[in-house]
Length: 370
Ligand SMILES: Nc1ncnc2c1ncn2[C@@H]1O[C@H](COP(=O)(O)OP(=O)(O)OP(=O)(O)O)[C@@H](O)[C@H]1O
Image 1 (cartoon, rainbow, N blue to C red):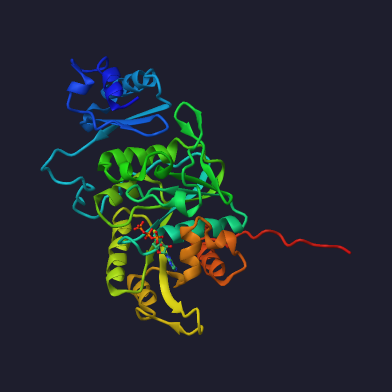
Image 2 (tube, rainbow, N blue to C red):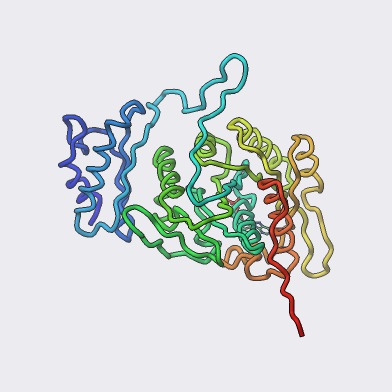
């Protein structure tokens, strides 16, 4: 089964008077190795209600193609080529408008984002270890890998090659990563496919991952955002009902400038900044133990103060963190008693306090009567 077969099936579905494949509205059809088919129909936002039956008919037609395990058809409103990029409406005279608030997700109490102004600063490593640190505090935790251009949760949790089970219709069951409920676009499509997704397709995929996953009674859902502060990130920050955002930065000046952009982006959409984490803050020589601050020290804390946001803590540049992350054994899960797990736990505690306004509930001490 390939995209040609899917297009043949879609020839029987009409958009107005035209067959869908001839309408010029279809995105490229994506077929993953497990037979899951993804395609989107480009519409004008005003057509949304009228186009919904077409979307449903397209999905039904695709499901009938032999070899299809699941069909995901979404409606996307894409800007016309050459027109201005989609941005929030300009502020009316008298102040910033309140952006439309994304709807909450049933069964999920608090959602927060882990973001960075640029790539490669350790955002995903931080997101995964923060999720595990909250889990270690006895909370029920999920992680949504929304980094669609470079999904890393499958690798970081050691879940590469696994596929989520379809529970019913379009609803997917999250995978289990050391007790954290995990969903990633990386489970659904090949990494190379994710890289070429166009903005609107990405958005609908994120919305589906958020709302069509059987998250089970979560205290916290950690969203690993795509790096950067462009339109895609801005739209996503609006689409997800975020309680706040954690910004990860490295101490280099450049990264701090990017962190500032990250803070500005979330402020624009009125998502509270929970604070800044300084990653790769110091380096301890494995041979002699001498600690060096290769990129200087204290920059992120000073920057946080300047921006008026909390400094959540620092994580050193450590071989053990890289090795455990990259081999799917995150340090908080595999070395919970070590110093690195303690750094992540302290940061997670501050994040949780900021979100709930209270201290983290700790597992009750075990009382042994002899
Ligand atoms: N504190 C740390 N010490 C050592 N290595 C680290 C640390 N934090 C992250 N790394 C390593 O740095 C690399 C990049 O980390 P990660 O993938 O988490 O970054 P990212 O900001 O999410 O990147 P991307 O922009 O690609 O999504 C990985 O190899 C990871 O193991």
